[in-house]
Length: 151
Image 1: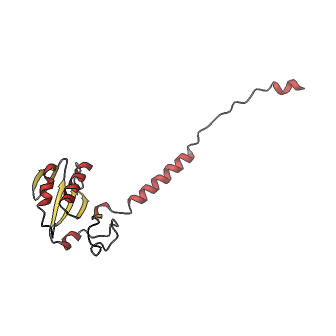
Image 2 (image 1 turned 90 degrees about the vertical axis):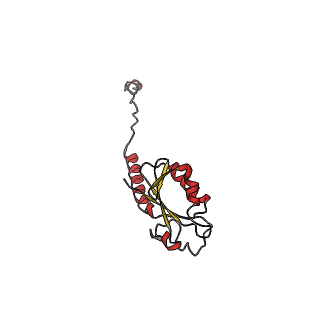
Image 3 (image 1 turned 120 degrees about the horizontal axis):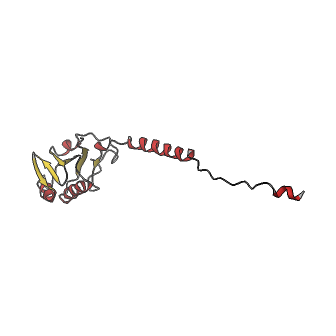
């Protein structure tokens, strides 16, 4: 009788990869990112430095609740900068990014540095935005808004 048990073939173990948990995780990530991207409209985020008085910062920073006309209420002068690939267009003239510090200094006086709305063109790079923000910070322009130029 002991010979009968050894005559049966050994069953091979098969390992299967189940795609259902992976699909569930991907669906949850998709829903998360879809919901989180619609929480704040990026075109209405107001960027301010910590040096501005708290009275002007009545809303929560980055909440997106600030109206688009907010820079005009403060100083009355709003300058539009349209950023391209290595260029900025303002007042109908196009300048290279190395001229941005001079443009930022010409925005206004030390008491009233003015306000800038950066319009990001479709060909603009992240480095162009960083260069513009650095030039504005160097000129003590603290009222900056960023919006999408569309396309």
